[in-house]
Image (cartoon, rainbow, N blue to C red):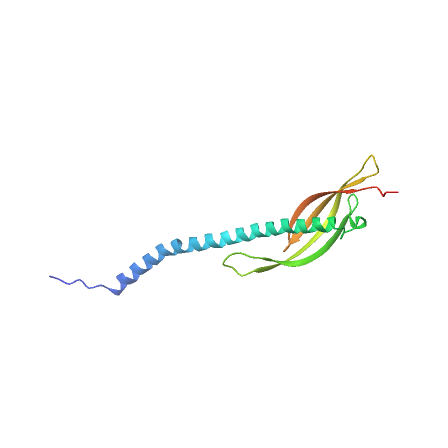
Length: 144
């Protein structure tokens, strides 16, 4: 019975072939996970923009933004700063984001009973990413 000895070169070639085959199998799941976290962060940022829009709408309903500051047709007001917010993802550190908004008058119409209507576009900036919402306003005539 003849013994066959392993040469160092054969072992190195075998290890390099195994490494070449394993790298794509290991790399792709990490890239997919990273891209999924980026998509999840964008979704959370959109959710935060929707939440910010409800905050702005509430500010209008509470008259914290008076009728005088609502821009007229083709005028822009702002940017108005908002407190920073956090994006929270499970298994990740909280990410602090800056928020602000601006208002742009896009339409104006006078009602038959003295009402004034304005169509306002609210542009919300969250970390330099903009989200645009439309908001109608009505100013009732002053009661005498």
